[in-house]
Length: 207
Length: 90
Length: 290
View 1 (cartoon, rainbow over the protein chains, first blue to last red):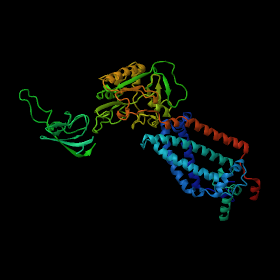
View 2: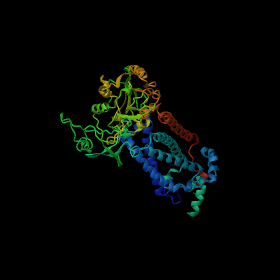
View 3: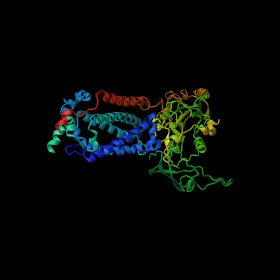
């Protein structure tokens, strides 16, 4: 079923690998970060070999995620630039959420919601990386006033990003036939025609 | 020549010179003697090239070979010196 | 070091009460700056009692040595030559942990039990639980804790909690040759400070006073200052120290807010799925490709 010749390729193997590196490092960062943020999550430190290891590993995982994320930015920024149709889509997002995407404006590879998520995540990542560097006492020594601000920015951006990723994961589960795009790289023609008609037209004309 | 805390200075007397770190203080006021300003410089006597902490010049290089003939007490405590600012700083 | 005789009033990253049945009294160390001669016997006593040795440094042209607190120097003398009223004064302050009643270090620390405040007011680090993140430095209004390069843990003055636990006074108190450092019940220290302040008033220090900053709930290390109206003269002693509002938000409101947000998003997702069902590709569209 996954190798159906009629299926369309949505993601190449390197795109998928990159996405999962970003995703897995995000989860590890989220778990270690939550352990350091809130005492209720302190038991997550057991996953990393204790509190000290959690503190040591968290910023290095951050570097890994940042590098992989930059690669993702290079690959996908152009596809996520907002156009008029995307703002239209967002105005009518209520219909989409209700499960009726038949009358939504024609979407390219990414719909307005996905593009919005892309940019929200971009700002979260930028703030996380900058504030993360300021907090990394092993290598840097910034004035304490900056470190205090960085602590608030880092926690707030992380909390927002965790929420956004929850939405991202939910959307992938909710829209059936989506997850396989990031596992195996392909989607059915029907999926493409219904959810991303513009992209479907582009890809099938070429292919 | 302005001296700031931590500057290196060469302290020279008629007998020789040492190099020392300047500790600048307002607590020792400049004396005016016959209309000329005379500053006071203090140097710990127990310093030298061997020790537990850092090595340094021996203060006794500067002291005069003068003593009291009756008591054999040496007059090491007070003598004239000249100061010269060096380009290094701690 | 935590010893059983000292009950715990507050514990880092812990939301439930710690053992605190015993009702002792709060202690305080009073440092009378007007009596300090800058001899550094207290620095030596602290090193001797705690077996600390800092690096042999350099002379930076000031009497301060070492120039700053380190993981091996838990107290340092800070020398300031100032002229507050046109008269030259040499103010010498013993710097170190102030043992705040509302400790910023404890509030910021993410590791449960790494920082404790005993019932007697002493704020102590349990390095066994410390993860070396340095949040304590971020939280401290006085910039006191220091991370050790060797073991990655944070260190600071313990107010000799080990000596106090067996009824002794801190090492610095015992050794001070002028009696500038005294120790006892905080109430008693406040009283003796008041007597000294009146004495200083008589000697011409009209603005002498006790430094026991309310912004951190009061401290268990207090100063008698000749110029209590200008604490910044004493090597930048903060005038009105308090835990930075950013730290209070970070370790206060941000926590329940984030949890509420996560719960809300998760529940919203759950409700959405069970009310709307999955978003399937419609049968007509599928049929087009069969």
